[in-house]
Length: 322
Image 1 (cartoon, rainbow, N blue to C red):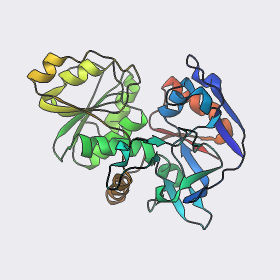
Image 2: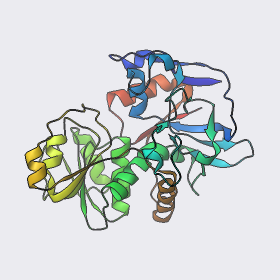
Image 3: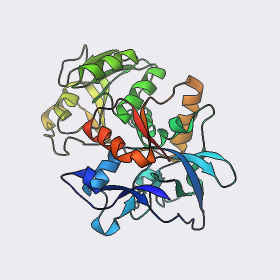
Image 4: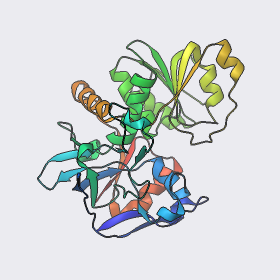
């Protein structure tokens, strides 16, 4: 079958390690099922894997991808929850000692014609969603949902700044936040992306580092070093910044004086739980929110899809169709 594979780790040129090639069919151990993948979204996680972040040289080649929607052998239309591991009974699965996702620790990913998935990770595709829309949910939309409503604890009428408009998580946070009655501000270096964010309902769209109309209750930051100072300065006293990535670097100044004087909270966040996935799907069905699709590519044209993601020209999710 055809798959997009991390064939080798190339830190300085991640696309050089990407190959689209034939691979063996997946096998399903006890408690797993093989699904026919109808759509699979790509994420910055895939670029990180190609750079050797979260993947070792001993684990390649490995099929990339964390997100998939497809059909089981008995005809069920499903979406695959990306979080793997063995949590203790009642434990948040994202806090399990062996927390990982597809395409890590030797587990083949979703960018293939078929993939093996634990049965417990197969959830019904939300009613009225296409396979392309459903494939966007497991990482970007679940990450944004957990950041907004679990880690930041935001409620209708409160305000949030989303750093870096246009990416999968930031676009999801804008759409989900609007639907929940939040006041959502965004930043972007791109004037075009700021304009698109306003069209989608952002209360304001600003260049990075700009002063906001007022300090916000929370900031969602997956950019890291380049935006960290602005994130802290944009918070009201007692506000919360939720971190789910560091695409520009993981080592900004902590600015401890500001943190203790203004009593700020910093919370990390990684994807979400299966229960949160179910909650999010119900929320999407009730509100009518649908993932924003930037573009669709054939799996055989994955190189072009990855190039678009790498160049940062997308607004919304990029999806591969096997």
